[in-house]
Image (cartoon, rainbow, N blue to C red; front, side, top):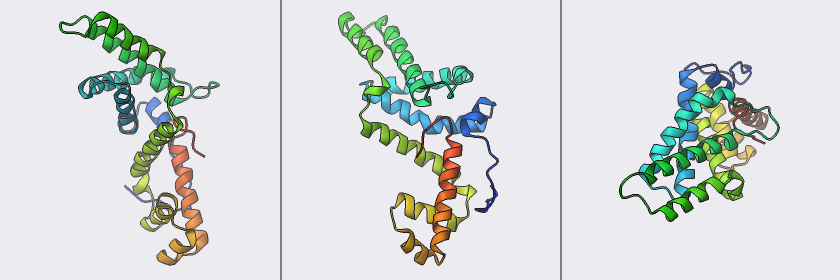
Length: 203
């Protein structure tokens, strides 16, 4: 992939826009970004690994079919909330299907599980888990964006933003001006915001 200079404007659509336009590569990246999040939700909801994996696949298939209906411009609409709704619905479908199988969990226990999933909301997640999920998405998105930047520009961004080093120290380390460090960091963050537009609200 050709690298871009820091002065080249971004002309790419957001990931969400490219998925909605039918890009298979964009869809694959969306699955990479959010598949692990869906799986983590299911495990936190006490589903066993095999069941969580099956429900995650069902959820992502449903996302493919329903994504054209998602409108991030609606008041209060978030991709995270929309994705959770689909995950919750597929979880309930899975539990109801299991309830009809031999050796299934007893009726009252199964109903309690279904009720627990049905009544759960994404708003119940502790802020720490929300932040952890968002950080994971951002890190995976950054990994996909890395080749679009010159190595020195990327290192200036990563060392200051991710590693927490001071711009002054990194400017000395890379033998560039402090202004260049700030510019590199700003450009990468801007590209990340554009890339995740409609998916994540970034500061």
